[in-house]
Amino acid sequence: MKRKAHLGFWQIWNMSFGFLGIQFGFALQNANVSRIFETLGASMDAIPLLWIAAPVTGLLVQPIIGHMSDRTWGRLGRRRPYFLVGAILASLALLVMPNAPALWVAAGMLWVMDASINISMEPFRALVADLLPSEQRTTGFAVQSFFIGTGAVVASALPYVLTNWLGMANTAPAGEIPDSVRYSFYFGAAAFFLAVLWTVLRTKEYPPDDLEAFERERGERRGLFAGAGEIARAFAAMPRTMLQLAVVQFFSWFALFAMWIYSVPAVTQHIYGTSDVTSALYNDGANWVGVLMSVYNGVAAIAAFFIVWLARLGGRRFAHAVSLCLGGIGLASFFFIRDPQWLLLSEVGIGIAWASILSMPYAMLAGALPEEKMGVYMGIFNFFIVLPQIVAAGILGFLLRVLFDGEAIYALLTGGVSMVLAAIAVYFVDAAEE
Image 1 (cartoon, rainbow, N blue to C red):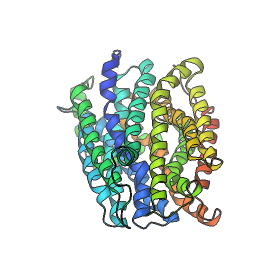
Image 2 (tube, rainbow, N blue to C red; image 1 turned 135 degrees about the vertical axis):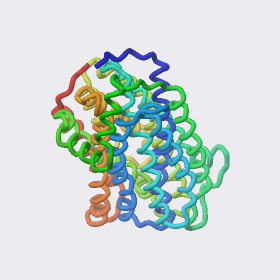
Image 3 (tube, rainbow, N blue to C red; image 1 turned 90 degrees about the horizontal axis):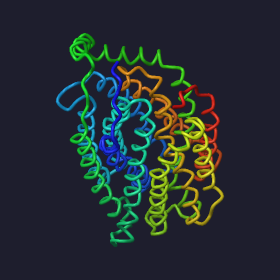
């Protein structure tokens, strides 16, 4: 195996720039889809089940795309064809989503949108491991985290900005999506496509060390059953480090999913005191949630480089555990705060945790994976992002209905506890501390 050359800062910048656009899609989805569902008539306990499309799609798509990208080589390289196809499909879905005429259409578009985003996103993780030597991977994933944070800052705040700075309508008749949300999605579609296109055009991938052997092996293992078999074998042989990180990921992403699907109803109920989706007060609260999500992503963009320093100081496990603890405290604090302005402080801890979640597990994992199966293993690793979201979708609505009288704030409190449990689990991970 050839020693990978060190890349310059702008090369790492260009190869990660597409994440700016990908996060436009995810941030608009996370900040606004529950709002769209409620506007189209979804009940509180039905929201998690409507959201289940997103994690189920990731469960199916990511290992398949990872396997396929491992076995692809052409004019656009190995990973870049998937970046481009996913960007085109996701941009189209972003244009359609805010114009859904009924709840079932919106739920279906969430499925399409999430599948398309996953097609673009999964190979980006593998690209860092493909092109960077081990000692640069923490930096590579941190730059990705920076773009994820930066893209989400703008995307999450867009409805607020369009309403308060440009005077766009923030309310609409019952069953209709406000203009501030619709035009945010249109802007996001353009940003997604253009940012991914930048990476496709500005990044060079290198062919396999032995291209002839690569082509021969690809021909021998072509077909659906061969691919499924290879994914199954890789799953059965996953490294010990990956299994240990799975526990950390479970509790981390359970917390994040609870936050994404319940922040709007939690803040509008608990702090703004309304559940009337046609009221100005509800829509002001929903816009404020977009600002809050913008803040935690902005913190993440800055904290990504702080976490690199923290990892050098005390190791990757130390950096990740500290970050997760801060995130858990921030998320649980929503329960105790009644002034929406003070929630900005809560988002600082959440932002630090988010930056670490997007970088440290992958940096710890990459050194434990075989180079030739990097894509499929990165896809399999996302099982442990998807499964906790499916669990959360299955039980949170039930818990709120049965135990908490529909009070969405308890979902965020549960998420805070879950993130602290993730921090404890970090210290059971065997990982290189480069």
